[in-house]
Each structure stands twice: as C-alpha cells, then as structure tokens.
Amino acid sequence: MVLIAPSLLSANFLRLEEECELLNNSEADWFHLDVMDGRFVPNISFGIPVIQQIRKTTSKICDVHLMIVEPEKYADAFKNAGADILTVHIEACTHLHRNIQQIKSLGMQAGVALNPHTPVSLLHDVINDIDLVCLMSVNPGFGGQKFIPQTINKIKELRQLIKDKSANVKIEIDGGVTLENAKEIVQAGADVLVAGNTVFSSPDPAATIIQLKRT
Ligand code: DX5
Ligand code: ZN
Image (cartoon, rainbow, N blue to C red; front, side, top):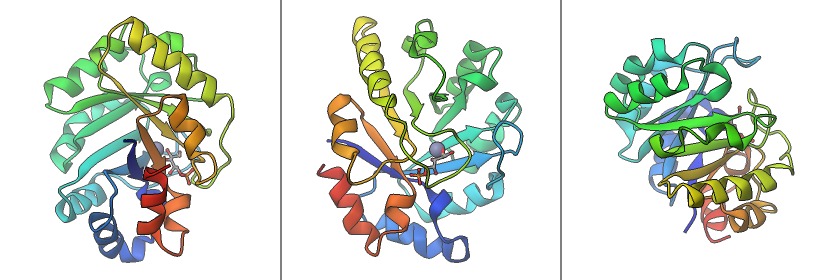
C-alpha cells in the first residue's frame, strides 16, 4: 500500500502542535518537512529549531526534504534535530556520493531529490547507495502548485532503473498530488505520496489521508 507523507509546509504554523496531533491520529505514515533556504529555491520556510519541536510531538518517520545549497554543512544538525530520512537535491550537490555517505554514516536514510528538468538517468551510479528518490512533480519552493504530467514517465523510468539495478529504493512523488491524480501516480509505480495542500486545505484532513491511501 502506498505511504502518505503530508507536508507540514501547508499546516497552520500558529497551531503546529495541533496539526501534528492531527497527523499522529491519522493514517499518515511520514511527516514530510520542507526546508527552504531562499537560495536553492525562491522561498524560505522553516529550519532546525522547528523540526526539533515537531520531532517531540511524533514517533512517525520524519522525512526531511532539504531544498538548500551546501546541505553537507547541516546534515549533522538535522540528525540531531530528529530527522530519520534526509533528502538532498542532486542539483545542489557537486559531490553527491560523498553527501550520501555522510547521511548514511550519521545513521539516517538517504534520499535524493530531482527537479522536474533533471533526468532519472543521473541516478545510475548512486541508486544502490540510497533509500529514497524524491521526484519533484512541481518546481520546488511552494505548496499548492499544479502537477507536471511528464512526472508519470519519470516514475516508470525510475521503476525500471530500480529493477535493472536490483536496488532497494522507494519512489516519492512531491508536488501537486491530489485525490484526482493519486491513482495514476501510484499505478505508474510511486511508493510514497507527499501531499501538502490536498491534506491541509481539506475540511477533513484525516479522511483525505485515508482517501489518498486507498487510491
Ligand atoms: C515544494 C515542497 C512540497 C510541497 C508540496 O517545494 O517540496 O513538499 O509542500 O505541496 P503540495 O502538495 O501542496 O504541492
Ligand atoms: Zn517536499
């Protein structure tokens, strides 16, 4: 069954503890935490102290998506803040292999995120070293954007690469996931759906999470 990772980027930050409780009492599998630095992406979100607090509210997996330059400078700090999975952008890593080794040596699962224009083939030589690939289905930086249809082909291509290399990697889709397109995304081969706007703008987020899961 597909895993659901609601993105707290769309939560009400004034009521963050309640929003975390809502997810804890739901069928959400992971907390997806979007960190933006205003350099890699044209937006700034939240960082280490906020993740530290969120960590205290939950025993669910904290899936931290770094949309920052020089992520190697902060891997240690995100581990200490409570990240279980740390995802870096391939476009932000000159020494991606080294970055992955660093994340693994700190005891976290390593994820690699690809922007919509970045080909899946670039993962060929690291696919056996990582735990997660995050395919961006919008240009990163903002919640509530429209799903880019070409992502469906990328999911299928990545599924094939994982099979060819006998890799043990989850495919996560991030951006523009809705109740309408979730089925097609899962059928193409996704393992994890990130959903910000769809979950938090819903009148009944817990029910929406169930709907996404049963898609
Ligand atoms: C975008 C973030 C996403 C975002 C998804 O840069 O990485 O995780 O919060 O939000 P929705 O589901 O609203 O597109
Ligand atoms: Zn994200």
